[in-house]
Every structure is written in C-alpha cells, then in structure tokens.
Length: 162
Ligand SMILES: Nc1ncnc2c1ncn2[C@@H]1O[C@H](COP(=O)(O)OP(=O)(O)OP(=O)(O)O)[C@@H](O)[C@H]1O
Ligand SMILES: [Mg+2]
Image (tube, protein in one colour):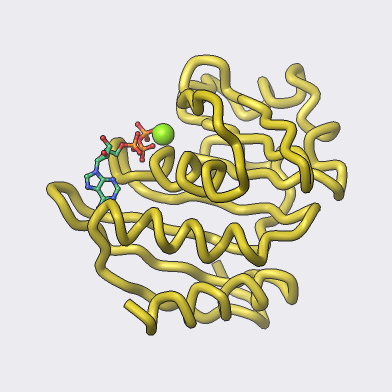
C-alpha cells in the first residue's frame, strides 16, 4: 500500500503482548475507524479483535466471523463490525450483505482477509499485520490516513513501553 501517510512499524509479541497492544488501540479508537487485519490462517487476527473488544468493554462471546462473514458488537462507545472475507467466493457477495451500510462513518469496522473483499471495502485508516506461528508473532502496523496516524502513534508508544 502506498500513500502520503505510509510508515510501517513492528514489534515481536506473545499473546499477552498482542492483547496489550490491542488494549492500547482500544483507548484511542474513534467512531468511523476502518482497520484491516492482514496475516495467514492462525496468525492471530481474531485474537487481536477479541482483545480489542474485551478492552472496549464487551463481556460476551466473540466468535470468529469465518462462516457468518460479519459479527457486530453494539458497544457503549460505537458499534464494531468484525468482518472475515476469507470464505467469500467473490468480493461481490459483500454487496448482497449490504456492505455499504456497515461503513456508516460512525461504526468501527475491522476486516480480516481484506484482499478477498477488494473493491467493496472502504480504504483503511490503519493496517495491522501479523506474521508467524508458535508462541510469538511479528506485529506490524501502518497508517493509511490522518486518523490512522493518531492510532499509529498510540501503537508506537505502547510498543516502546514493551
Ligand atoms: N503471540 C500470539 N499472538 C496471537 N495468537 C497467538 C499467539 N500465540 C499463540 N496464539 C494462538 O494462535 C491462534 C490464532 O488464531 P486466530 O483465530 O486469532 O487467527 P486468525 O489470524 O484469525 O486466523 P484465520 O485467518 O483463520 O481467521 C489462537 O489459538 C491463539 O491462542
Ligand atoms: Mg480469524
């Protein structure tokens, strides 16, 4: 991804570290934010979103949206829509789901496998990438908008503190 705001940072994290980074993001997340989550199967994308939701106060179950494509969480602050595009046979299926209604400018949208929804998703503010297996992961983040820059700074600070 290229763009004026492109910068990429990274950190090696165990699962607790990943959850702490999600917590740092939760503190600065604002309505309308779009997050893309990159990484292979089992990289930790859902684990990250689950930790984000926990940090935002969601106490009920957080299921992977692998089969449902989207799970929505009405939080006190905003609604968070969690998409997983992995099982889409065609990105156009997102249109049938009424995808535009989810990107309403008030909700936070987090998308796993965004490449499989190409053409139907809004551009992200922040891309979070996870790589690796075993107990540790390489976590990277990249701002793609002015809003994303703010989020990136929060990640930077939390990363430095670890
Ligand atoms: N450092 C770590 N960060 C994230 N997950 C970890 C870490 N160490 C171990 N894990 C485990 O790896 C698994 C990650 O699974 P998760 O469902 O989050 O992956 P995913 O990227 O969402 O995969 P998919 O593309 O299939 O949806 C979990 O079982 C989690 O407990
Ligand atoms: Mg997942």
